[in-house]
Image 1 (cartoon, rainbow, N blue to C red):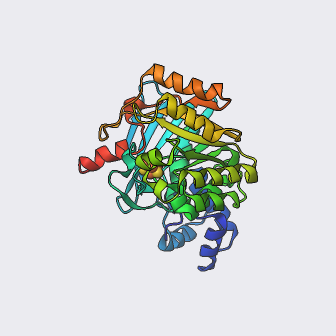
Image 2 (image 1 turned 90 degrees about the vertical axis):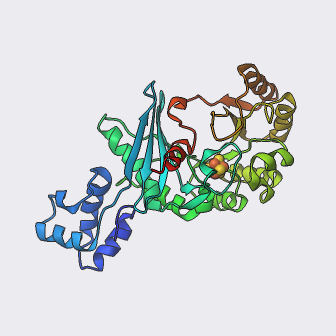
Image 3 (image 1 turned 180 degrees about the vertical axis):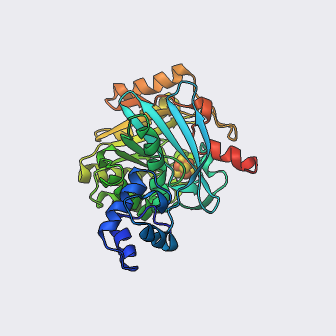
Length: 346
Ligand code: SF4
């Protein structure tokens, strides 16, 4: 049994089945989550016969880093993790002036089919387990610890639709919140969804104060369905209703992501429609000029168009920030590195 990804309680229960006392779970868990141990051999506060017994029943398996790319400015590090069955997923460390943020993946591939996204080009392979999701952050945390730094925030915005893998995502966040892993505050977590309405409603009742980010990308049903096929199942009007309910229930501001695509959704008309749609909400818009994705025929608007769009929102009292570009030189857009390696047969 691979114990990486287990909580202390789950590990204690597994140990009990082999008559190993509960306090051993404390010792093992610290080695595993805070000291990077991947074998029982190194756990020198456990007697040798116990280490041998543990190795007989259990293993500690973490995903392997199979590609590591640093951006030229040093602010972004992109990792491609490979899991035990050969599936892969990307994780990105972004070093902001206000702290270190990690963008994690929740599925290998994705079935949502968003037009601008490289992660969906090969469809969904499978959900990642809670351990595989948490391992992405713990791996980066281990790396940062060598520099005397830590993971400050997490964005659940990498490959996959997190609310389609709800239980594993929540279990991973709860694990990362534990003091014996990285003790991450829930307020430092932002989860981004393409708009899975039942998942948003469930999350509002979960009792963990994480921030919600909704991928909007269009101000009308028709255009949104064109860019995001999920809109046919969960229409924009229902997504906005669920988002408003989330904001009211959790008292957390909802962020709307809006990828700006030249001549598709970046015009004056769309900006005005978007402002009308969000009027009077506890919300802000994060504008993201599309990252060049060679597989797709979608282009980035010029600077004037981006600024014009932002200005229209601001004039209508909608907070609109322009996402800082990070790591375009290392294909930091979701799914690009994984695709390149898949296409190369790696
Ligand atoms: S943007 Fe997110 S939800 Fe849409 S296809 Fe890409 S990974 Fe899936």
